[in-house]
Length: 134
Image (cartoon, rainbow, N blue to C red; front, side, top):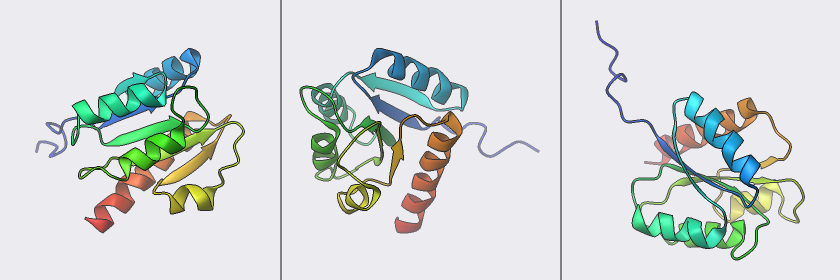
């Protein structure tokens, strides 16, 4: 018997972080976990990618503090989208706490440093919660 998920397209994650090494590690790890990964170095690039690919990006993993446009600005933009992806915010040091991130529309806030397993769990929880809502 064939697996019904076998032909399913991989879910797409947009990784937004101004640190190249973080983007590379997350791109590799999420790719290994079966996700398709695209990335942006700042919030402005992320918003451009989101506009160009509306409805095609399932998740956004975004750093909170970045130059050009920060993660909160990205989250505010996403809240205006008709087909908004689920958002997991990541941060090493931020004034933003979990409750505030959730109130702004993020599915989760994960503190750096984190294990890849913690991030993948946050993405899976976001996916499960979005399916309950839809």
